[in-house]
Amino acid sequence: MMSFTRITGTGSALPGRCVTNEQLAADLATRDIETSDAWIGERTGIRQRYLAGPGETTSTLAVAAARKALEAAGREPGDIDLIVLATSTPDMIFPSTACLVQAELGIKGGPAFDIQAVCSGFVYGLATADALIRTGMYQRALVIGAETFSRILDWNDRTTCVLFGDGAGAVVLEASETPGVRATKLHADGSYSKILCTAGSVNSGVVTGDPFLRMEGQAVFKLAVTVLEQNARELLSASGLTAEQLDWTIPHQANIRILQATSKRLGLPMDKLVVTVDRHGNTSAASVPLALDEAVRDGRIKPGHNVLLQGVGGGFTWGGAIVTF
Image 1 (cartoon, one colour):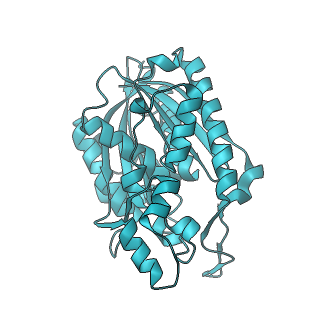
Image 2 (tube, helix red, strand yellow):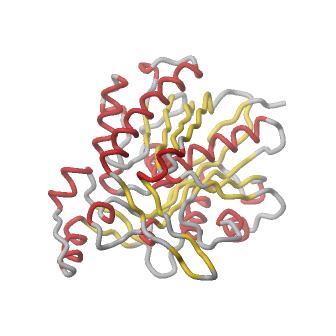
Image 3 (cartoon, helix red, strand yellow):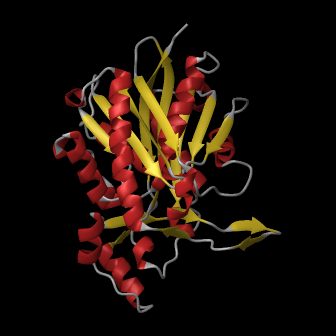
């Protein structure tokens, strides 16, 4: 029996509308909200983001990313027997966005379900699919991170609305005789739930409470840097690798300062860091697979490379994986 899993294909999708900092600042100015390209860029490293328009949903972005991952893996939709989709912005309360993707791809029978771990969602999904395939229950999975965060933002709050974007990323994960996913570690601490949350809920068909994302930026920054370092060290220990043996690191693309601080703590050079936050903004569960697909397709990630993937977000959740390609 095959006892390992490998990523055999990657894919991603972005909405059609790209919004630069200058364009966003001009739009916010019409509502007397002051910001600028310099203000956003200096604090976050973000220069632009993609925002979903009419007809673009979490599921449509997920399907587009999944199709590209299947093509890269040389697989057909019917080859997939498991779909795990990470999102905090599903198309509807139920059925799951994973089931909507399954139907659009024409797949029947295998399990399809959503995971809600916010910005850690993709690595949670990857770890879950890895564990299920290793049991022998399934052979090939689609693991997808997809978000339309623009639809839960308060566009009158410049501390949050400038940070996020929409998109999707996907991988095909297959049973293998050789190691690919070398280690996964997942964590959560619900006592930090209030520093990053969207507290609204649906009651009797209407949203009650605050339906928008709220964040205590400094608290999130401090916690994120701390737990990402700890998680990286435990993953290296579990995989038997050293930091020097990592070819690339792809942390959650939330803020360039978090990425820089984490790399410094681990003693990793910035040229080993895959950065897309400048062009995508924070796409929550989609950020890691979006960056991964870009680095695979442009040739930075090559066969045999060791890659550290990490997520951290509301919950508070965090986790990661070390994967050999």
